[in-house]
Length: 395
Image (cartoon, rainbow, N blue to C red):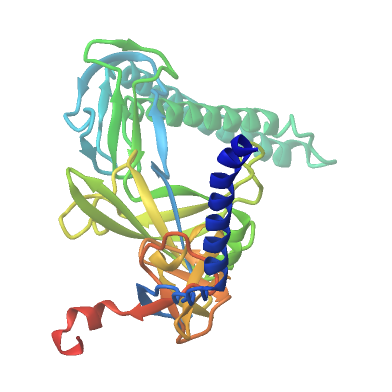
């Protein structure tokens, strides 16, 4: 019995102590919990503006000559001289002789043709004289009945006239061949390629080089169907007095310097590209190596790859905001009553500086232009403007 008490007494004391501690803890009042208000974030904002805008479309393309041809001779012979203007990169004027083919044989052909024409004329005069004599003889001697054409020498006259016309045609052809020994072009242009040399014998149709006209260049610009709609351009459009050609601004960076040129959309293709499913507009620039050069004197050179901004022709009401305000999936953040609202907008057009929308925001509302992490609807936010933050008096 004593042994049992010896071991159980300390255990009973420990249990009683634990129970008293728990009772005191239960009797103690719980500490008051304080809920902290969400922390507000300061974000840069800009105001949505309602404007009457003319939508422009950005695209790109390669500059091509409107007229580009191969130089081929129309007569055979040996090349005896080549103009300095017929060198790669050089320019030429209309009617300038670029290549001279040996013309001795062609001059002889002209002389022979002239002799045949003179002979045919003599023959015709003889037959006409015979016809007059036979007609008089018939009137003096026969008198009765109508003479046959042969009796009046009419078939012989007709034959002589035909031979004269043939001889004159041969003479014109000989003169034309002689003129073709000088290769000339009816337009002003530049040389892309030259494959001929002095002393070379060339045949009719042989390629001697390639040139292009510098009066006009064209740029083929790919467009989606929505871009055509934004520009109010139909498929198969052709510029005219009734249908104004939209203005196009071309730009390119050459040697670290930006250059700009101005042209017009003159037509759109009447079909859709089967591979890309795109439509193409063709812009044209007049006198790209002369009047159309930019302020630095840089021409819109053939082969240059350029960016293009096509100006729309139909103004419309829209909402304009900075490009930084547009988030992924066409979302924008609007601060209203110090709360962040996430909205979806209908984007009409975007550029490097601004975005144009038709709905989703209202004029005068403040859209966030600074980065936001973990944004959610109802997040506390304070709007600040960059001008106000930069002005010490506004602090």
